[in-house]
Length: 214
Image 1 (cartoon, rainbow, N blue to C red):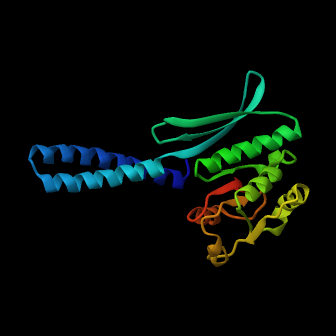
Image 2: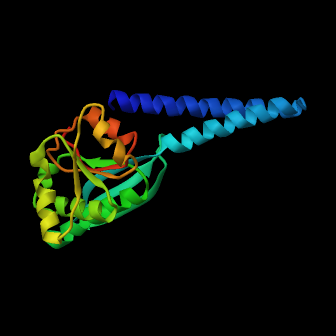
Image 3: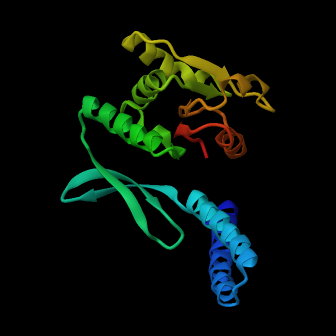
């Protein structure tokens, strides 16, 4: 577990403890017939529960073998280990089905309203990564963000094959050039040159999907 994940889990744990404490306090105030105190406490409890719901669930990803077949799975999980929206896809050798694998997986992630970046993109070269990113970027009117200009060649080539046009935006410190695109979905391909800190900044104003280099 890295430092960020540890801070995240500790924060959710603290919020959960606060919610339990506020719930007990609420019942006590009701027993004391303290109406104003009960209402104030209930508002705090509602706000705390909203924060837990917003930040507790995160995406997980795994590749494995089952019944002799390669499969990829994506699901949402909270700090208690509860799981929801578990999706599984079979991985085939066919390049066409590989294209569909990445396309449907990233489309599912986008539909959930969360960001997700797969690691080790170089292991999946010629599997339809850029095809899926190019197609989804066009369908969602998103943008392709990069630091390393060479990283967008794959998506540019797929644009030509699909006869579509996507917007490519270089990442700059402070993101001033990205302000006009706030709210748009950001697509990142392997070798983008974006650091973990860069991507975390992008997540503040965008859903971010694709492949990370770290």
